Length: 78
Image (cartoon, rainbow, N blue to C red; front, side):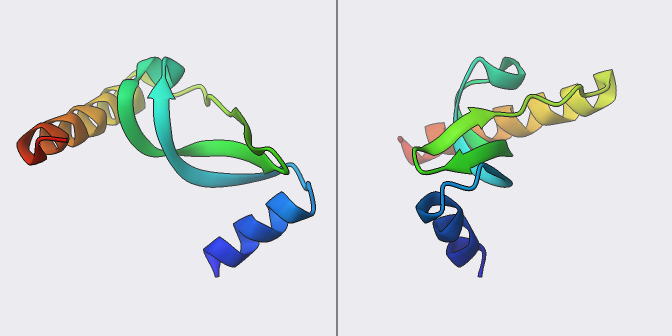
């Protein structure tokens, strides 16, 4: 159902907000890791990433999740 909803947002050029997995390039201080973040989706795909103001604790946990994923990628030789 989620894929159907995202597809509709793309075809209808809705500018809808979804949590989608994408490669970070500096957003949330993340680099080179694919993780779910809020983004605006429209006919062009991901229009922009919504960087939320996270507390220090939330940011620490987010960075820890990114590091866990990086280690997982490394272990898989990706």
